[in-house]
Length: 77
Image (cartoon, rainbow, N blue to C red; front, side):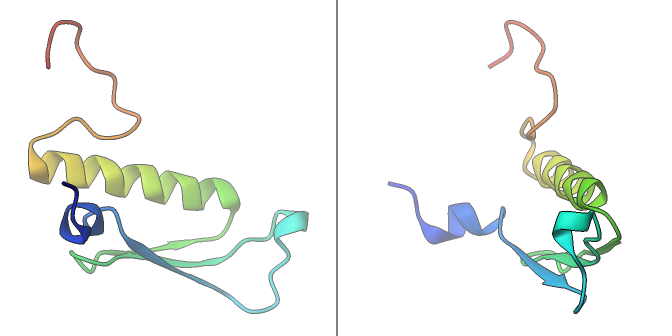
C-alpha cells in the first residue's frame, strides 16, 4: 500500500510571480521541495522543468534510487 509519506518526497510548492504571462513564455517564480526545504528560483518554463528534474535527481540520490530522467544501466534493478 502506498502512503502519503511515500509520495511526499516528490511534493513541491510552486509560487508564481504576479503578472507573468505563461502564454508569452514569461513564467517566473520559486519552487520549493517540501521535505527538504530546498528552493530554486526560475524565470522561464524550461528553467522550472530543469529545477524539477534537478530536485528529482537529488531525491533519488538521497533515497539510493534512480531518479526521473536518469538513464538506468541495463540489467540493474
